[in-house]
Image (cartoon, rainbow, N blue to C red):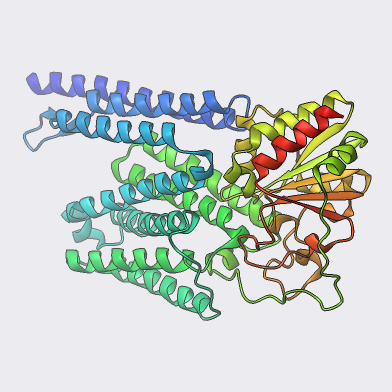
Length: 484
């Protein structure tokens, strides 16, 4: 009788747990939907976080495991879980509150890497517990082991790759560009896959030493495939690594039969994959080239017949030119984030708009150091989302634009992408600002962009350079316009 009561109690608690997972999954989806607009993105994060908190809380309270004697026991180490939850939550909250907007890509890479590491460690922890009965009847090729192997492989690649991306974005690790690296990456990737197949075809459990070697090889691939990647490909890599982490988390969901974990992983993995494909399409590049680290190579410094004269403009002339324009486009880049000038950029927008000038923002999909970097930056300054125009639509309006102000953007406005076949960014769609009637480029110096290639836009007959820190230049320009 007691055993029957235990079964009934377990069934009731299991039902409550499953219902909570369904609710959590719905909250994930609602959160993801609300993330699609800057106006609702903040609440979208809160909805998704609420779903995750609900799943964790109900798992702690209602998760039961059947024991050998037929009884059901819940989770015992709750104090340890609470401490870990508190420590991790405090670190995450503090880091997110203190991070500067310029360091947002690094934080995204770091947090994503932690997710990959978590998935990989789960697989390492669970590998010794592969059920013997499964191995006896099916060998290592079973659903449990497959989830463990895939979680370990993908999680390790995501962790190592994200850490290298963090170092590169933070300026601590440089690019390694060599034509043979893509072949090395292919060899390492093939080795990882062959190693995984070898483990799965065994008819007995392999030693943990072999599993650790497999994990090390996956980590090494994560390092090797991100190391040569730079320039405009970095946002694509971050998006790709994000999708890897989602897939690795989904493997954990399969492993534990946890629907909330599975749904969350699938949503992150699919969203990251779709974003990666869209960004590659926008850059006219293939995912294979990005994964192989094919970006880079030497570029000619420019054709010999190009006039290398740099034409400058002073603040007074720039102010007059802007005030007497009908349509002005602002094209932001990473330099805007570095200067923390997004609020001044919006102030200039409002000032010109008050004088009857139509102001829009041309947003390139890979401007900055992470997907949507410029969107986030301008949203922080309360720039209306309706004013943000995608690159393709902005290009259609360039011939009818009086002035384009390029603030901190370089590679995404480089004519070499369309005119120089020897350039490493050749074929990548850019914003054709040189087709506008006038171009004002705000830069500290004539330094090259992240892709380390010459930008012939600076020497274009319609381009005028306004040298100096973007924040200071905008402050002076706003003051000059107000004085007119």
